[in-house]
Image (cartoon, rainbow, N blue to C red; front, side, top):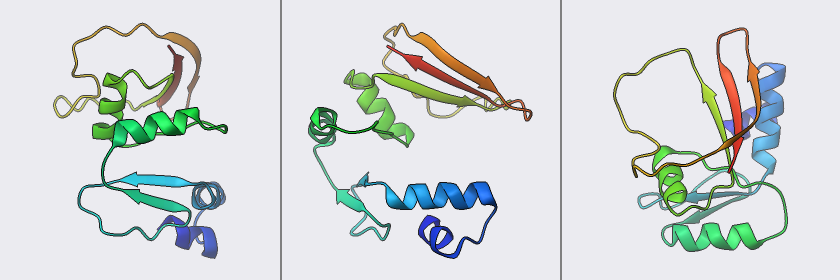
Length: 127
């Protein structure tokens, strides 16, 4: 989807800008089921998540963004996350998977926040 939007510029201005940025950055997909990925600049890995994240953290460059609850939860348990960006929507789900299942306390420092007209709040924390 994002590659097609990046090429065709078929969505809103903001979505088109995001698609171009997302399409151009290097991405690593960890999966136990996928055989191939079709996104530009994407590497598919099947194992050694912890080792690969540690290697990435040693490389020069920008931030590492992690998406997906399972991977984020594992990386958090290994204490490999330096900053957290949460986007809180004004919806209470009530049940479902949680990011922090380990039961350990984690003290964070609020670096910034932004409230949107929709009621969504973006929060930025550092360890």
